[in-house]
Length: 313
Ligand code: TXA
Ligand code: MG
Image (cartoon, rainbow, N blue to C red):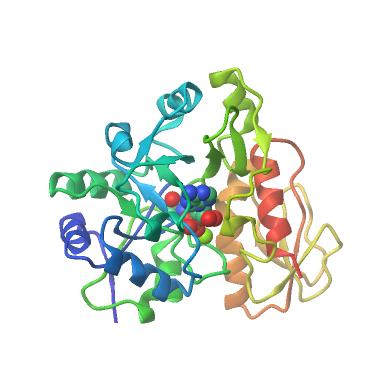
C-alpha cells in the first residue's frame, strides 16, 4: 500500500507522468493531477467517487500563470489576487481554451488558486519547471465526507484506492483547516460562493466592493446540503450527553461522561481542529457529536457554514 513521502521531486515527476499526488495546502489536503491531462483528471473523480460534472480548482504556482487559465479578469479580481495570493482564496473567472470541460464541468468559468503552504508551493514550482501549467485538485477525501487536514487522514481515506505510482506528500498539518473562500468574479461584483478565511470585510478593504453571498447558480459541490459529514450524527448547540463527542471552544465545559474531541482557544484554532475532530469521532466510533457553534463574523461564519453541512440530515 502507498506510504506517505516527503519527496517533492518524485511527486512533481509523478504529476508529469499522469499520476495522482495528494499534497498539503494551508486549507486542507488536495488530491492533485495535471490539469491538462484528461486521463489523470478522470482518475481524481474515480478515486474520490465524485460526480463527473463537478468542476475542479486549478492550483498554480503564482499569479504569473493566471492568464494561461483565465481571461477578461476584472480589476477587482486582480486586486484580490495581489492581496490574498498565495493564500486560502479561489477565484472563479472566465476560462481560456486551456481550461477544458473536464476541469470546469463544462462551464465557461474556471476556479484558480495559488496555495501558500510551502510544500504545495515547492511542488507547483517544480511542476512548472518541468513544463506543467496547473494542478487540478479537489480536497483529498472521499466524496461527501470530511476533508483531510493531515497525511494520516489522507492515508485513511484514499490510500487503498490509489496506485503504487501515485504519491501522498507528507507535511505539516493544514493550519487553516477549512477550505478556501470561493469568490465568483465573473460578474460586476464579487460573489462569495463558499465562505472561508478570506472574509467579506477583507474583500471590502481591498476592493472597496461589497461582496454578495452565494447567489450564483453555478454548480458548487461544496454548496450541496449534505457534505463534509462524518459517520457520527452531528447536532449543533445542544447539551452533550454521556457518550456524545463534544467540539467547542475551551471556555465551554465538558458535561460529565461526554467525550471532549477538541478544546480550541480561538476561532482560528477551532477551524484548524474541526475536521480532525470529526474524524476522531469516527475513529472512536461515537454515535453522536455535539458541536457548539462559534459566534461572530468572518471565520466563525465559515465554521458555522461547515457545521451546518456536517449536521444536515
Ligand atoms: O481549499 C480548497 O479550496 C481545497 C484545496 C485542496 O485547495 N480544494 C477544495 O476543492 O476544496 P473541492 O473540489 O473539494 O471544492 C472546490 C469547489 C467545488 O465545490 C467546486 O464545485 C467549486 O470549487 N468550483 C470549482 N470550479 C468552479 C467553477 N468554475 N465554478 C463554480 N464553482 C467551482
Ligand atoms: Mg471537497
